[in-house]
Image (tube, rainbow over all chains, first blue to last red; front, side, top):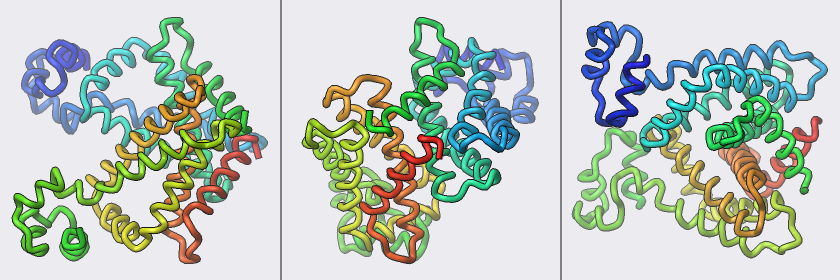
Length: 176
Length: 176
């Protein structure tokens, strides 16, 4: 939805209406609403695909992997998907950073990603509270790696930053 | 603010107005708004005290403590404060669990607690990304412990559940 992204960047998210987006894209508003519940959803349309990739990668990870490493495999796969759409992700991030409402929505999506990850781990036979702790810690790693990736001028790849952040988490929880 | 809590439980948060709360409490609406920005803030008024206790405990923790253990000291102190107001915390939780809007607000408050904890760790000389990772992992521990505490019928104390959850996080990140 390039038209919406362009308008959000030009005018700001709050100042853009669905009528503006439809006009710019050469669509009717009705057509817009067939694809998106509201103007916010344009920015979160990729969340379902991300969650499905995370969950399926965790499900298919070798049974021999420890829960934290199965979670990491899923998060790295999600990171690789974001990396592929690098330009889109950076534009999206700039729009979200400019709006408190969108930042809140992003936090809620991250929390639902943590729930989906915990559920995927329970299906691998991980007990509670280990499944929830592993999932929350995994999402913490993902969040910190993503922030580094967005700020990074050295153009490091996101899956690599996720792996590095996990190693750092292992170090800090070991008391180092 | 017992009047507001009672009404939220009787009628639900969405169905209660500030006029209802003021009437029940024998106050004018004007007096209500001198203490709270809106009806939601009645439920989040304790967040500042919690954050200050967390931050000051981390600041005053012995310099010899590893970052994760300094964070844990702060979270256990915050947990002890919640434990003291146990009845209030349980009533509050039941109100929040019934409203999507309030659950979102709670997530946002947790995210700002994570930011405050990361800042407290940086002031102890912890570098990035270790400070953010430790803080996010600490809040993950706190969140999981808090959920166990709320669901618990065995009446375990919250600071103890936080300590246990931290030990479990150490185990899962060590690949166990």
